[in-house]
Image 1 (cartoon, rainbow, N blue to C red):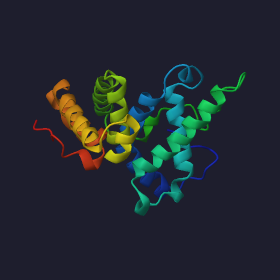
Image 2 (image 1 turned 120 degrees about the horizontal axis):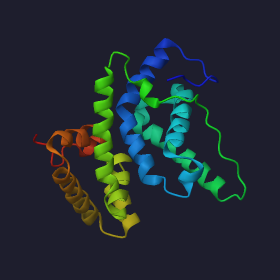
Image 3 (image 1 turned 90 degrees about the vertical axis):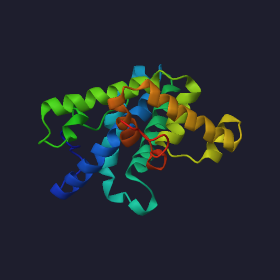
Length: 209
């Protein structure tokens, strides 16, 4: 992938960002697919949204502070800002399509060059299956995945958003994780827990493949 021309890129910065990107990218993509729906995607497809988000993240990489939270939560904050901007533009009649700050290139190029093409395809296919399984959930369950699994919101906040008790929110999340285990092929359950779910929830019904 070609990095934004507007930002200087040192080998060290590129290496650090690439490593963090590889770990966070699948979850960020799932978050985007859960939040972006028509008519928003008509003006900014998910792929363009992701490119804009990662371009901003790379440009602000020096401001990431691991003491204040995870890299994934930091990038999600940037994604929220991009989403808000696009929603505002959507409400403006005759608004022009937002510009993308990245060159036309695939984010998958951030994967280590040593990774074989076959391995890259396999990684992409596994992620697609997990994403499709989650996107097939009903709206409230998709929200649970976004809020708890990806954004790591506390049960108290989720309960307030859903209008249920904190205990009910926790129980619902645990049941959802268990249900996702049964819907995914055995070989992909680890993908769900290690790639998409927040670290604090990776011990819930941990895969026994």
